[in-house]
Image 1: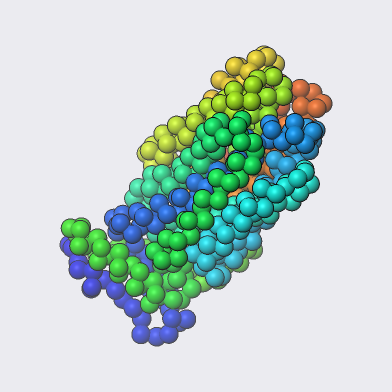
Image 2: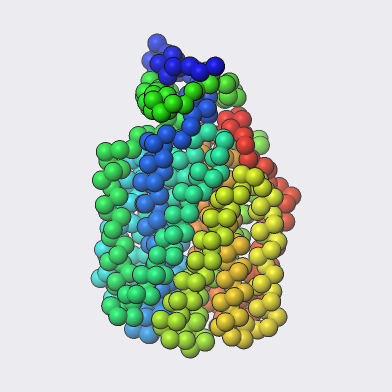
Length: 468
């Protein structure tokens, strides 16, 4: 039976701070049966624009590095430290801003993180040596590390369970488009204008702040969880009116399980009850997948240039090709994961990705073309895991600690990402490139075993049903 939007609001008469569990569940139930309205669609796209440049900012140093290695006379260990500095900053940003978003809201934190990584982009233009670049990339990483996990929690909280995977992952692909854009821009600009051109382009996301300020609304699920039910009701009622005006017949809200009396997040709860296993599992999945993916993608342009002696433009083109392969695989994942399921997809990908790496280890990675094909194929498979783990992480936790849980989980992404380039540098200096690929294959097998044994399936289930 269709119901006019005006009859669907149930705002309590008591103070917002005294909102009941039923009030909070009602907001979630109303969101669950809503279609994708224009506001939700454009909210995703505006944040997607910011996430696009987050991805660009994270990887642009990899394309600047072949020039910096020669200009500054960098050793492999110094190169690895510069590549890792941003990821170490991201670890801190993911934890801190995930915690802060639970307390002051999603939007305020998102605005600040964008300001931070754009301002550090300006500062990187004036770096004159390895130490300065490490410090600036570390500070920039704090901003980029905070943006994506908070954005992930925010977008997940605006949509229902039906089609959540596809809707969210088509947003998350914007991060991968940022990686590809960095390669394309580097190929066109770096050989002619030098490494600073990469950071000049990174100033564009400052313009994303304008629609952020005037269009975006706070997460109604977060508002309701904080007892601010009247504000949440106003936002959801606006979405309901938009849906009805476009001819959608809204069903009666179906009861959503939300038995928790808690409104405040507590990091200790991540290690209690059902959440202990989920937390440790997602941490292992983050670490293993990102250690390999970012260990390879950040080093490949330099590897082609320094080890295989390819021209700069060719080295950048090969790195770009790998990024494009990752995007194609990830779009396929976005379209299929709601049908296949999260656990089944991740297990299969973790088991398939080591095969091309073992081929490289066996052949000794003799040519650049072998690396392009095999490392590119492995990276593309891994990328379907890495880009979609934000979806999976947000599904594992309740609203009161979704940003915190996602932020702490993605901190292991940063730890893995910072470890990967360092491991490549150390093993390259000691044993050669073939051993690097063998080590990465072993890491992925560990990820496969953890996923197979301990991960849970989340497809098609409401967020409140998954996390009581």
